[in-house]
Length: 326
Ligand SMILES: Cc1cc2nc3c(=O)[nH]c(=O)nc-3n(C[C@H](O)[C@H](O)[C@H](O)COP(=O)(O)OP(=O)(O)OC[C@H]3O[C@@H](n4cnc5c(N)ncnc54)[C@H](O)[C@@H]3O)c2cc1C
Image (cartoon, rainbow, N blue to C red):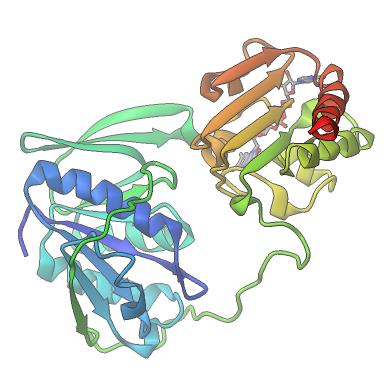
């Protein structure tokens, strides 16, 4: 326990460790390298200990074992985090900018009278100073902020750090809740899963994303054929989903899915900040757009300025012909 430690709220999702937890752990390791403190991961819930191996790159793992924490509910989470953060006294608390994190972090900051920063993308320690790059106004502005006060509560955007692949020998401490918990005014009722039978775009290596540049619903089939020829699936920007051309499970972005495929082909997507929030960490991004000033070109590794309709069918045919030769 030191004022230089970095505390991470590890999240679970349907009993599995959420990807964001390993991303936060990677960020925390970097930060702890700067502060000289330890990385402390906090897992809430009776089954928390089963995720300890995955989080072993931390120095310590605190598992708070209480049935009231079995499913996310803001009040019990908040009560426990307030107590744990107060007693640990870390330099910073890394929380994912997720449904759970966005619910808990502001209230935690208010209760602890601690600074809260949202949209954190980069976090570094320079000397005694914690410097954060925070995406504000829906990602249109990147603000460089020096955080004064401790602990700093940092809401970290998914994709800001590569998930840690390191393992270590973290010390696991399973503890009862430090405060008596009772159900709050908000309780967990039901988890609504994506529509059955649809693909999970977060698990695809290749995504072909269509935006409003596809122009007509009748052109969707050609884009899907290209996606399948590439061994991938179709994804979309929000307007495509709003028009019911694809289900919500295919939407990429702030109010959709965060994806990190090996290859993201953006066809007629302008690259609004809300869309970029969901795809900018893809390994390889190629954008096709008629507008050379489209913001998608700022995050694309390669850009093609052309009408997507001149590309989609010939490219599909060329790929299929190449496969036929093989
Ligand atoms: C709170 C909030 C949350 C949001 N969440 C999301 C989200 O999760 N995901 C999301 O995507 N959006 C989201 N949005 C909407 C976002 O702001 C943009 O409006 C949206 O991403 C734009 O979609 P688009 O790129 O398909 O359309 P447009 O911005 O209209 O862009 C179409 C692009 O296609 C190009 N084009 C046109 N014709 C062709 C052609 N023939 N060939 C090639 N290119 C062509 C144009 O040059 C243009 O760049 C959100 C907005 C808000 C306010």
